Amino acid sequence: MNTPVIAQKSPYGVNVEAGKTYAWCSCGGSKSQPFCDGSHKGTGFAPVMFKAEKSETVYFCGCKHSKAGVTCDGSHKTL
Image (cartoon, rainbow, N blue to C red; front, side, top):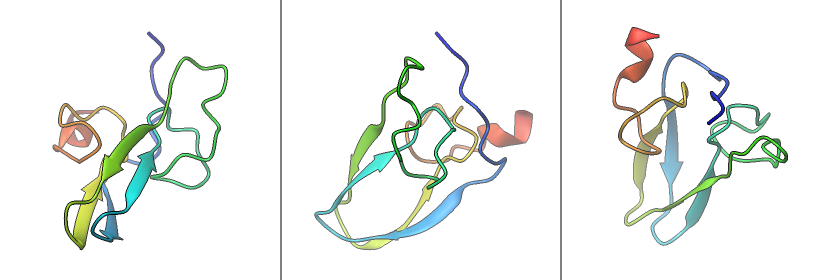
């Protein structure tokens, strides 16, 4: 599998709305971080869908190496 581009070595804090679905960028190439803009085409990566259960601030992974899926787990600290 390809290695994703590290978009940034910190999470993206985003205020999400309950019931809304977000397409998280897994390749790291999107210009609309942390969300997908289609830059993954031809890379073997695909966006990961995240549906907000409640309105809150979600810390989406910016390094693209989180073991917790789309949310930050601190993996950026070891890169």
